[in-house]
Image (tube, rainbow, N blue to C red; front, side):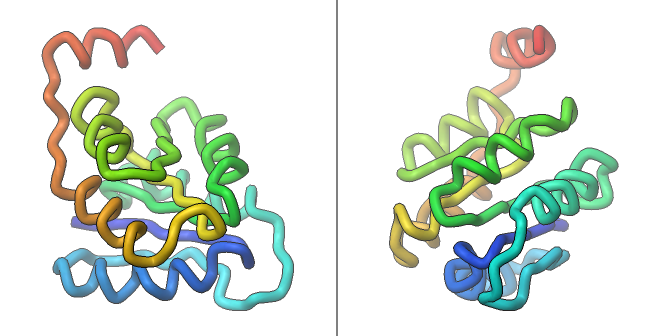
Amino acid sequence: MKIAIGCDHGGLLLKDVILPLLAELGHEVYDQGTDSPVSVDYPHYAKAVCHLVANEACDLGILICGTGIGMSMAANRNKKIRAALCTDMYSARMSREHNNANVLCLGARVIGPGLAEEIVRTWLATAFAGERHLRRIEMF
C-alpha cells in the first residue's frame, strides 16, 4: 500500500518511530516532511499529504503534530479527505470500519510511541465495512 506521511516540528520524533514500522509492514512510504525540529507551519504538510491521498497517488495518509488537532482540522478542509484524530485502538478501528477514514492524525504530545505504533497497526489492518456506513459517508 502507498502511504503518505507528514508532520510538523512537534510530530517529528513520532514520525521517526512510525516510518520504520511502515517499512516493516511492507508499505511504500511517501514522506512529505518535515525533517527538522525547527518550527514550521503544519498546514503545509497537511496539504501535501492530503493532495497525494485525494488525487489517489497514495492510498492513505498519516499526519502528526503535537496534539493532532491542527493536522486533523487542516486535513478535513479537503472534501476528499476523511481525517480521524485517534488516541486509542478502538477509535482507530472504528474510523476505518465505519467512517472509511483515509488519513490518520496523531498527537505526538498526547500519545507515546508504543501506543502510536499500535494505533497505526490497527488502523492499517481494519477494512471499511461498507453498507449503511457508505450511505452515510456519501451524505457528506
